[in-house]
Image (cartoon, rainbow, N blue to C red; front, side, top):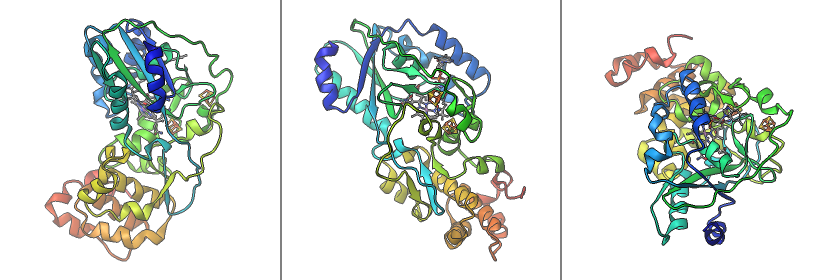
Length: 348
Ligand code: B12
Ligand code: SF4
Ligand code: SF4
């Protein structure tokens, strides 16, 4: 069966495809439990639903799981004032839309029951992909395929059809520990384990509300995601020709949720929403001491519709020694004043 869909898979942009049996996940489930008991998931409570990591719960008749990988372009990383860094996967269409569509095309017309997933539930996608022979799990916790690297996204097709499992043995990381040494926030707390609460990817994409003052500086120049532990990995070769950054001004000039949806609604940025992306861009401007952005920050501080954006902008305006004091007006605004305690404004 894999042979039959192999050609179509290639046409659909899939680079790796393999099959595993659902029963081989016991060890990983207990590791997930330890991870959750350590509270490493932060606010990602959707990972706390143990049933959802169970293929048999998602499809009771499941006999085989097809794992597949779709690559994305590696881009050039140039750090410069006025620009925010963006994880390479975030350019182009949101993979939460693209991968399920690709999977559905792959199984179109085949006999049997199929359910497709990509990043939607706590299904252990990396252990599943490793079991199907797609690669090995690196110390940075990512799935790596020698010769390909780790710049790909994973999806799964659960089916009631019995398909011959595929296997592959890879040597793994060996003595390398570059990712552990390079992570700027110490989020890789030990090999193969990430405390998401310290990870820039979590802070910039998943964590809602305000970041604490410490977290604001932890994100450095990243406005969305983080690729450092992939960039330093010797399995990821080559450099892309396009840049992986975005002008802070471009983000901070988005005036409304509607404008944001028109511009970024179909991309991965939509996960952070307008308030999250603008919040991050404001913190990055402060981290870069990019004072030239002050006039735009002042506009946001004066009247932005989102309490998160407005109060973050007031915090930044204060950091940039703006001549105006926006806090008094904000305190008089009922919709904004209840957020002031959490905003970090009273701390510094
Ligand atoms: C929650 C989550 C996050 C969290 C937590 C990350 C983490 N490492 O746990 C945050 C927000 C930080 C995050 C960040 C990123 N993520 Co993410 N994330 C997920 C998600 C939804 C769940 C992961 C999970 O279950 N974590 C809990 C831990 C316990 O599980 P685990 O890391 O898989 O660990 C297992 C193994 O490591 C193994 N294990 C444990 N100990 C040991 C020891 C040895 C020796 C071995 C071999 C294995 C092993 O057992 C564990 C439990 O089963 C998955 C999608 C999914 N449903 O799987 C995407 C996913 C893992 N993310 C992905 C991506 C692309 C990213 C980012 C690169 C995005 C970015 N550029 O900003 C970063 C990378 C950060 C990093 N180094 O992991 C891809 C990874 C693709 C790949 N090549 O591996 C996935 C698979 C999404 C997808 N569908 O493509 N992510
Ligand atoms: S994505 Fe960035 S912050 Fe997160 S573990 Fe990797 S290097 Fe550290
Ligand atoms: S940087 Fe080194 S230790 Fe980290 S995942 Fe890559 S090979 Fe493994």
